[in-house]
Image 1 (cartoon, rainbow, N blue to C red):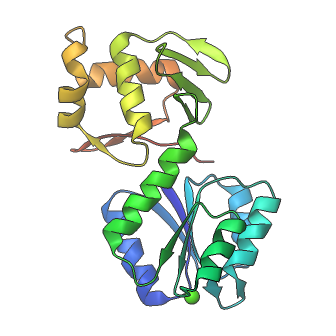
Image 2: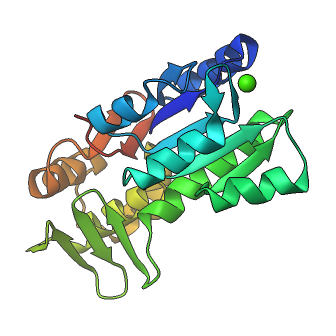
Length: 218
Ligand code: CA
């Protein structure tokens, strides 16, 4: 996934950057509140990781401005301030989740995945991903409102990838979880057929590992 990280602490920022890059994520790292809104308006991100104490402003105020500007992407707040009031303020300003520093990296990754997954899903058992909407119970997909005809295997592959968007699904996971129901073609052939129907850029190939659903970036 593509993450906008706003963190002025060099040690924390560098550590997180290394972890995200290891996991195959794209990270844009900003150290000031100034410029964040412009960046979000210019590019598409899957999530924002936001420190509250910034040198040129308050992260909570920045978040208020983002929401007021119509930015609805998931935001995870990281903060050293652990008072109950700050927690409440964080949620009131439109944060999706909250982590108190110091935190464990695996917990950060799990929370981040959870808020991105929640943002991609919806309450009716359907899943939205960019222009795509998947109806799991009826095995229907629309792209920008128009129905897309997928085979059973293509639907199952797409659903698996969208449900875990932001995480690389390994070839073994996809082959064991989805392909037993396939019509005998290889994983790569199914992915290739799927891309022809839903657009080339939604499924990213992670060489030597597998595939990941990723929203196209401008
Ligand atoms: Ca800080």
